[in-house]
Image 1 (cartoon, one colour):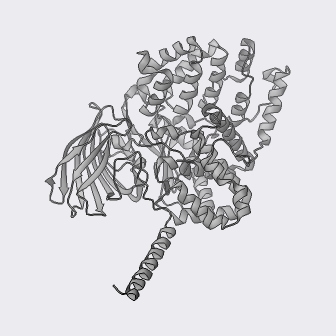
Image 2 (cartoon, rainbow, N blue to C red):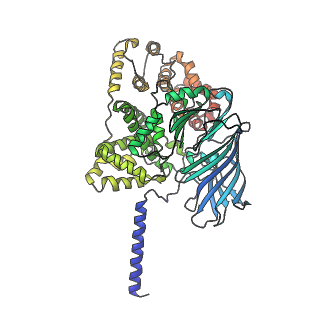
Image 3 (cartoon, one colour):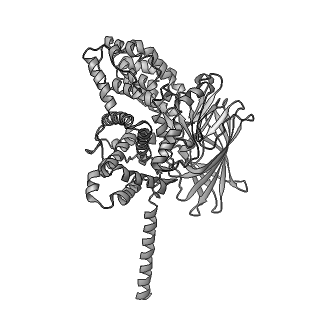
Amino acid sequence: MTTRLLFALSFLLTLLSGCLQKEQKKDVSVTSERDPHSFARPDEVVVTHLNLDLRVDFDKKELAGHARLTIHNKTGASTLWLDTRDLIIEQVTLEPEGNETTFRLGDTVKFLGQSLAIDITPQTKSVTVHYRTTPQAAALQWLSPAQTAGKKKPFLFTQSQAILARTWVPCQDGPGVRMTYTATIRVPNDLMAVMSATNPTTKHPDGVYRFSMPQPIPSYLLALAVGDLAFESLGPRSGVYAEPSVVKKAAWELADSEKLIAAAEELYGPYRWERYDLIILPPSFPFGGMENPRLTFATPTILSGDRSLVSLVAHELAHSWSGNLVTNATWNDFWLNEGFTVYFEHRIMEKVYGKTYAEMLAQLALQDLEATLKELGPGSAGTHLKLNLTGRDPDEGVTDIAYNKGYFFLRMIEESVGRERWDALLKMYFETHAFKSMTTEAFLEYLRSNLIKGDRTLEDRLRINDWVYGPGLPKNVPKVFSEEFARVETQLEAWKKGTPASKLSTHNWTTHHWLHFLRNLPPQLSKQQMQELDRAFGLTRSGNAEILSAWFLHTIANDYQPAYPALERFLIEVGRRKFLKPLYTKLTETPAGLARARKIYAQARTGYHAVSTSTIDTILKWNESL
């Protein structure tokens, strides 16, 4: 080969390399990082569409049918790798011929389940997996009529996040893989089915429901609920589903949903999912809300009677941009979903209800964050925004670090560069990366390329690496001050100095005022003080779960026995992990409390979702105590 030819070839390779680098820079959301919580190999063969056909059997506690997966074979591979856990795989066929093919289930791995390896050809366009779920499927909660508001008909709901979709659908169960889906769900004809997709508003007499999700979503946003449901419209783009005895109350509580949607769009661009509906689930739902696109799943504990807990709606709505639209590539990058969403939530609440309201939320968020930092330890790697969850259940990353440290990081950037400049960047971020995945490193590259732009002084002032890869809270954490909470503290000090509780000025206090009051009570209170507070404010009788939970921590710590029956009822009836975890933890601090906790849990456990039992089992060392 001549020197001239070698030079020409070298020049061509250099040019090609430069083009590839430019292409990679253009789409920083693309990552080749293998998901540590998935057996799938989407870099070889990726699922692009799912078609479900399932029958819901309440007697067997089983979903049965098939999942047809449309695939794109990028490499000419001969194997499609999927994630499964506790599924019974009956047959796999290659489409469109319907010829049966061979498959293999891998060894069971804790948290992850089993790989499903399906033999395909380079020409295979889709495969159909015929399967059944098992009663222990962790995503599914089957409720008896007694566990519902109506007490007459059963209920089923799913919770797929983080890696539980594989317990009811064979799929590539990682947040970095997106697919569209359609579904046919067959249920008893006196029940209604709804999904994270297009939805009916009335029951179908034949019990057959068909769904479509035309926007590509990750598997953790697959969602199904089946029960005795009614629908109430909240406006042209929103409505609420709930059991008939609950739906009117829910519609009143959530009346501002359209205002929240409009505020969100003004901030960061158009809502991309057509409708924003909610479903109020039975109280065993383990989370406050789950941002399933088009249909937020929500706990009934937000129905406070005074519309003071609608920040949860703002949070789940914000996920329509941060999380559902631009998604963390792996669960190690979970803060990209939740930190952005808390920030966006607070901006929505400020726009609709004012800065004073939003600052109450911010101060409560800081209190929660400081409590989590104390629990984990200030030097713990668990306090980094970027996590390393390899070999661990990704659910362990669901802490206030992702949510509130993430929020304060983004708020710090806003305060450093100015809201106008920051908002322009965020709006462009959502537009540029819509329906794509994002790693922490890709986001930081985007931030440096489009905001910092080589400004060394700004880079040093932001202390990005300290926030993302370091423990605890950096020195440049934003200052938070709530005038409303200053008023609360004045009343609290007056009570400490002898003013009777009944004489305190608590008129028009919201849930947030009460939370700040309760969180700042002295840890040690006499029986007389507990009784005085309870008589003045009816705390043990409160219908507000947030207030009850905060009050019960004091009743446990100070052995206030008049509250114990209400505490027991609360722990039996409410399955939201946010409330269960601190209350059971508090009970374990004394031998008598631990005995009480285990007695209550023995009765309550069957009513909790697997997401909650996995946490409480550990706190109470449940398997060891049996």
